[in-house]
Image: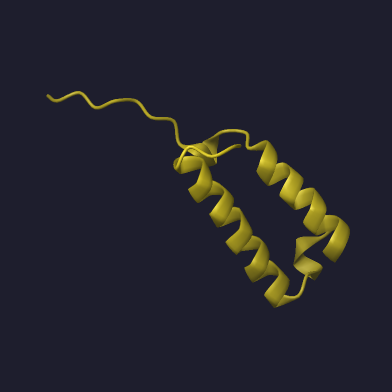
Length: 61
């Protein structure tokens, strides 16, 4: 059987940039994401996706 390299998944690692992003969004939009506007939730999800994509490309975490 072929062996494949073990590559950690960035979504399973602590990502300090993601924690900082959530803190900023909670300050700007309120403590409970369920209370955010639909557009704010979409924008937050897009920002998180961009952070994760950047980490796959060797960016910061």
